[in-house]
Length: 467
Image (cartoon, rainbow, N blue to C red):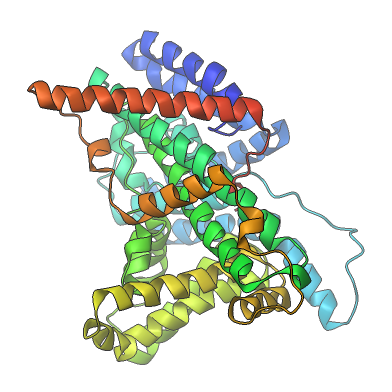
C-alpha cells in the first residue's frame, strides 16, 4: 500500500487516526501495532509471516543481550542472522547468476526468490536495535509488543527512513499527542504527497520515456533532459516519502529525524552525503565505518574503509553491478576530496563547487537508473555528442504542464523552503495570520490537486520500494 494511494488516504489513514485518538493511553501502541501489521499484510500474508518471524528471532536475541551474559556473542549471532536473511532474499539470484556466468552458463530460472517488501529497511532497523542495546545497557529492557512496533511501525516500515532504536524507544513508551503536533503532521504529509504525486511522478514520466527509449533516436538535449528529470524524480520521490513518513509519525506524537537537507545545494560530494538519505549514510557511518576504525586508523585504512562502506551502500540499494559501481563511483570522489581536492575546491567560486558536485551526482544517477553497464556508458556518450539523424529533441518530451512542474521542481530542490514545516508556533498579528491562512489554503489546494491526479491516473511509481 502506497501513502500516495486513494485507499491509504481515504480509508486506512482516517481509520487509524480515529481509532488511535479514541483509544485509552495504554491501548494506543496496540492500535498502531495492529494497523501497522494490516498495512504490511496488504502486500501479502507470507511476507508478513516472514517479517514477524524475523522480529521474533531478533527479540529473543535482544533478550539475551539484555542479560549481559555473553552479550557480544549474541550480538554477533544477531548480526549474522540478519545479514544472512537479507543476503538470501535479496542477493541469492545475483550470486547464482554470477557464479553461472563464470562457467559461461545461463540461469534457467529454476531458483527464484521473491524480494520481501522493505526487507533492506527492517533488517537495518533490527541490527540497530541489537547494537544499541549492547552498547547502552541503560536503554529500556525489550518487550515483545514494543519490539514488534519499533520494526513494523507503518510510516517507516517499507521505505524508511532508517530509525535508530535509541532514538525512538522512549517515544514508544511515553509520548504526548497534541492538536499542534497533529496539524504539523498533516502539513508535512501534504507537502510530501505533493512532492511525490505531482513532481516526482511527472519527472518519472519524462525520465522513463527518454531513458527507456531506443538510444539511436536520442539527441544530446533529450539525454540531458532525461537525466535532469531522473535527478529530480529520485529526490522528490524519496524525500516526499520521507516527508510523509515524518508527518504521519507526528500525527501520533512520534518524532522522526530528518532524512534530507536539500542535497542538490551541496558543494562537495562529502557535503552531498551529509544531506542525502541521512538516515542511511549515518547508519553506515556509525555501524560500519566507525567499528572499522573510523578516522582513528592510518590514512590508507581510512581510504579502504571509505571504499568498503560505499561498496556496501551501493550493494544495499540493489543486487546488480550497476548499483555497486554507483557506490564505488561516489566513494572514489569522496577519497579524492580527502586526498586534498577539497582544499582546492575551497579556493574556487561557490557556483563552480556546486556545479562540480551536481555534475558528479547526475552522472552517478545514470548508473543507478540504467542497470546494464554498457547501456549506461552509451547514455553518457549521448550527453556529449549529438546523434546523427536523431529526431527526438528535448522539446518532444515536454508540454506546458511538464515545463511548469519541471521549473517548480528545480526551484524547490535548490531553495530551502521548509523551515515553516518544522514549527508548531502559531503566528500572531494580522499580517502573520494572513500568511497562515494563505499557507492553509495552499495546502488544501495542493491536497485536492494530488487527489485529482491520483483519481485520473494510475501511474504512481515509487523507486525505493525496490530496495
